[in-house]
Each structure stands twice: as structure tokens, then as C-alpha cells.
Amino acid sequence: MPGTLNGKVALVTGGASGIGRATALTFAREGAKLILADMNEDGGQQTVHMITENGGEATFVQVDVTSASAVEALISKTVETYGRLDCAHNNAGIASGVPALTADYPEERWHQVIAVNLTGVWLCMKYAIVQMLHQGGGAIVNTASIAGLVGGAGGAAYTASKHGVIGLTKTAALEYATQGIRVNCVCPGYIQTPMTARGLSDPERQAQIVARHPVGRMGRPEEIAEAVVWLCSDAASFVTGHTMTVDGGYVAQ
Image (cartoon, rainbow, N blue to C red; front, side):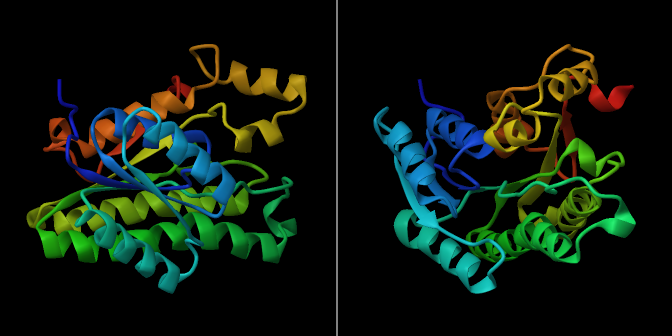
């Protein structure tokens, strides 16, 4: 039975691990051809192998999403390889680093987080939208966070960047709604990924985080992937400008 995205072309940034890898595998399961972008070439190639060994099609491109020329080249490579771009999951991101109060937050780290998490998403949207306008439409899903919906003490840059992603999503959705381009975002809660694992090595800290989720556990990357792929499918054809929270009830409290 054909998948919901059979014959479509999907781009996933941050596809070397975590949510990006899970989303790429889910796109492939649903019949899409994949372009995977990440700074981590080894992880990206591993994701490609996971797709191709199951009969899917995927290509890895090493990309720094903070570079406009690199992102423009990424979109060109996508079209050169597969002829079009139907779905874009702008997922690449980094964590805040060591927690610090706003007045003490390191300026260098602020610029790094904003560059990847916010400017990088904007650049990927910018060049994906140009291609989607040219071909007559497409679907974009950005990875925001519950940190884009609530404050987060000690994480000024990350919280600001994710609030910004939600604002970008809503703005672009309004701008291109009549031109066949849908733009949505997902707001994951704490998900079991390599990035979150680095900040939750302390069992007591992890227990505190789990306790904040009414369902009593952290999420799995595959649970975010299913939301992303649904938002890119025709089943979500009337959904745009939406902030989909996938957080085990975290922000409902």
C-alpha cells in the first residue's frame, strides 16, 4: 500500500540523530525521497544507510544552516537531485549550554544559539519558500519547543529562539496561505535524544523533568516525527499557522 507521501521529496535538517533522524525514517516509511542535512556527516550517513537498507532513497548534505550561501546550495542540491521540494522539516538546533541567568548569560553563546535555532530556521524557510513558490506549493514544519510557549529560567537564548520560531511560522503561514504553501511548527516536550541526554545525566535531574510531564515519562523522537509527517501530508491540507504541542501534557498544567 502506498504511503501518505509517496513520490514526494522531503528535506530534514538536523537529520543525523534524535528527532531529525526519526522524522527522516518516518518520511521514508511514507514513501518520500529524502535530503538529510546536518553538520555531523557520520550521523547523517548513518541515517541515509538506515533508509536505503529498507529500500528508501536518501542523500546526505553537510550543511551549516547559519550560512545563507550554504542553505541556498542545499535547496539547489535538493532540486538537482530529486527535481523538487515538497516538504521541509527545519529541525537543526542546539541547546542553551550551561544554565545562566539573563544578566549573566554569555554573549558568545547567545549569538550561537540564536544563529542556529532562529536565523538557521529563517534561512531554510527563505530558500525553501522560493522553490515552493516556483513549483506551486509545499509544506514546511519548523521545530520549536515547549520553551517557545513558556519561560525557561537559565535558558534565555534557547527560550527566545524558540519563541521566535513560532512567530516566524505564523507570519510565513499568513504570507503564503493563498500560494499553496502551508507552514506549521511542532513544540516537543522533553524528548529522549542525544542532546537532552547531555543535560540530564544526573538521575535526580532526570526524575524532576519526568515529573513535569503528566503522562509520567519523557517523549520519544518517533512521537514527534509522526506529528511532523502528518503536518506535511494531505491529511493536514487545511492546517497552517498551527503550533502543535507534543509534550505529554507539559504546558497544559
